[in-house]
Length: 174
Image 1: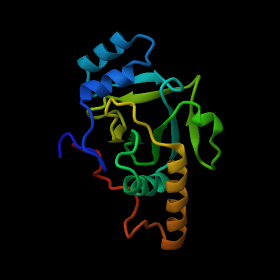
Image 2: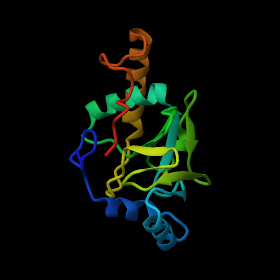
Image 3: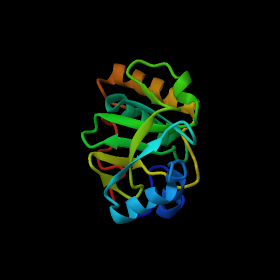
């Protein structure tokens, strides 16, 4: 359904989301113009200012996102690569420096991430949960609980969480 997101009411507009994302760019106006010229393009944005990103294998991230959607009204933004191999959860700044976990990569201060336009997908990336412009991020403590529950379910159920296999491949598609 257009304008809605998993577990939420749709939040703010794509314009709000663009504003929130480009605010961290060294030149926000240039970043905004780049997306206006090519909405299917990507931009490189610095992590560690308004958000960090925890990237993990989709085999765990998908089931964890399923759990998150059950636990909170709307998780923070989540990116996936086109092959559904890895997922990136947007969390508060400073989280990446404190996070310990096998297979988890943290992007925090001093790192950059490739980000597609919040209204779509681009060059191998897509939003499973697009930003809504409000600045809402995934609470690291709740993400940790979701990861534990997902890992336990995967261990017990042969890769299934609540009878489903990982994240819905159609999630986030318009």
